[in-house]
Image (cartoon, rainbow, N blue to C red; front, side):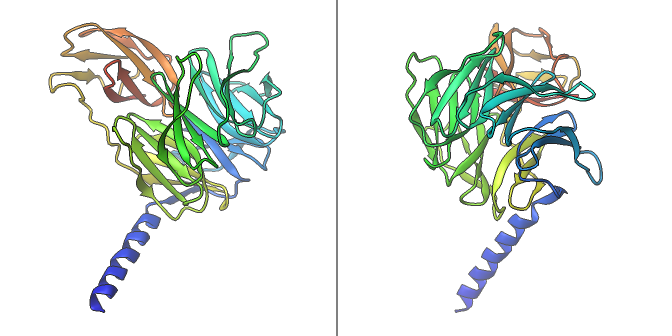
Length: 347
């Protein structure tokens, strides 16, 4: 009997510890869901508030400021330079605003979608999760009048997307799983990756994908490089987590039942040196250029933001500079063709 009491106490303390990991950042929102960071500004899609708001995460007591209003159930966000793309579920469309405008006005990008949710960019191709359409479509954002083209169909309520190389990972809410496709395939076919309890949102950080599991009230993660990936819990007892954003080692989580954003400190499972001990990225953090020492040949690279969108790509060699001046401040991941990933901060 004593052993049972001890075990129960340990379990309770563990749960309390997990709950204690979260700190309220801002409250009083209207069904907050998708989020995206631009430097210290956290943009938030408020579904029933019909607006995008933002907070400065460096403030002691952040206050939400309206950015653009009059939207139709904005669910998810994606930042591309100064353009903030907005998935308006109620309007069945993707719109965008210029965040540098004093009074931003939403402009339609593509319409006639079926409950658009998550988005990810691959060059000029914007991939869109159409939840009630049970499919992923894509548009070319450089087209004068973009037209959505089906990429893969017969999904189970796809909600969010991340891209790693040619692999597009899909959170299938009612399918209770994360699946993936190869976007270079002529006719992509989904492959199951891991199971999850109503996955509402996913985010890529290096080789790991973080999952907001709506049905399990938790954030979990898995390593995409594992042969047989399995999920690990990060924080539990959250209510309904609906969005994730990452800055440095701080994970921001939107909770739609509590109408607030909370944060928790995490340890990124990323090795700063994934090749050999001779390879070094410097300076890190940097405001203008990064370069490497120890490379023995010219290599291809891609730079991803924390949403999994490819921001920049090219080739580099030993001591050659990579220009990052056009990137907004924040955390990025540089991945080589070999699959090795390094993280860096743009300041």
